[in-house]
Amino acid sequence: MKTRLLVVLLSLFVLESGMMLSPALAAEKGFKLPPYHKFSLSNGLTVYLMEQHEVPLIYVSAVFPAGAVKDDGKCGLASLTAEALLFGTKSYTKQQIEETLDFLGASYHTSAGLEVASVELSFMKNDQDKVFPLLKEIMVEPVFDASEFEKHQKRVLTELELAKDRPSQVIGSYFRKFLFQDHVYGNPVGGIKSTVSQITVEAVKAFYQTNYLPRESAVAVVGDFKTAEMKAAIENLFRDWQVAGASPPVSQQTLPTHKQNRLLLVNKDDATETRFMIGSYGIKRGNPDFIPVEIINTILGGRFTSWLNDELRINRGLTYGVYSQFSTYKNAGTFYINSFTRTPKTIEAIDVSLEILNRLHQQGIDEETLTSAKNYIKGQFPPEYETGDRLADLLTSMFVYDFDESFINNFQKNVDEMTTEKAREIIKKYFPEENLQFVLIGKADEIREQIKKYGGLTEKEIKADGF
Image 1 (cartoon, rainbow, N blue to C red):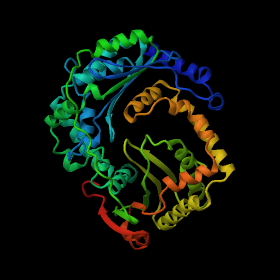
Image 2: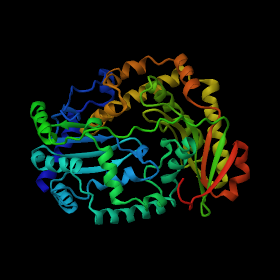
Image 3: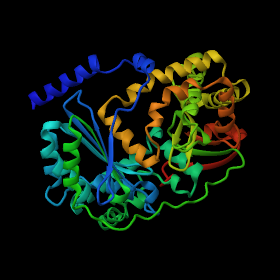
Image 4: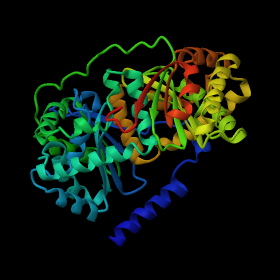
């Protein structure tokens, strides 16, 4: 194990110190996605292979159409199913899976997000023959051991209860539910106690059988291998995974329309701070203005020297942290400002946040500020995709969200083409200034009357089940 760890650490040192482009040099040269090979197996599984020989590691990212949007009233079902993939397979117990992968120094993880479930794995290239049989059974032949599932279910219920004591962990779920309401994008990924407690191992098995289908899934393998050999290995590994049919389509509901400012106040009696999110709908991942939106958001609240952080945190000391973000999905997205402050400063912090958002619309972006943001985002971008795991995730994201390498290869060109005039158009089109949705978690008695000026108020107790 010591020798294996030393090899990994030395390899990573070489990668970091000499074989990766610096952000500035990468931006100057223009970052391009490394070559990759894409093909489909006879069962319909999409496969991406990308050789990267800097370190003797292999990264695997697999995605399935099995996210929380498929929960169908059983909130938490997708998440429980993904996590239970590791609870034993046809040939391996949960303990054998863990002991084998841990002994090999492999990193592994299964999870479900809002739209997809995933299996992620990384290991030394010499261990491929030991790891691949495990990977195949985790994906194709899980048995969902009942005793392991019940123990995990109890832990999840405890975690759901504890999460309510940490507003930072739950405010995103409250915001999405308040914004999307009964739309599937409002489903809480981790579930809620009343539904998680009722989910059975039989329901998990049924969800797996319905949604983990090769024809709608993809596997990306990135690392130190020869493409022809890896292609043969993958074809052999999954040739017996033959499942007919298609998974149920995601409900194509119309997004709720909000014609006024709305507020949700979540009361936490013992709170001394207020966590708040302000926002509305954003953009879907495939929006052609994705990069211009990111540039403007960098200025507003996407970096340490953003307008929001400068004014709220540095200049006025109103907040412990603040940022703005666009979260993107297949068919929609969100925009929000996220911050937390001492309870007595809640109103001032919100007012200043709204003032800065209004300044963005009224004043726009000057040339100097835009140039700074463009340089920043070009410098930050290449390192995001210079490691094997990030490249594997990028390839499966291309599959899920239906975009191609032009996003990477034309990135610098698209950034350079951004002008102040284009910035004004982007701000007007995508950065909401009306019909804002406010979610606050704090001590209701101390802020209730003051926040009513922002819009219609709804209240909940944080200890109540759900969001």
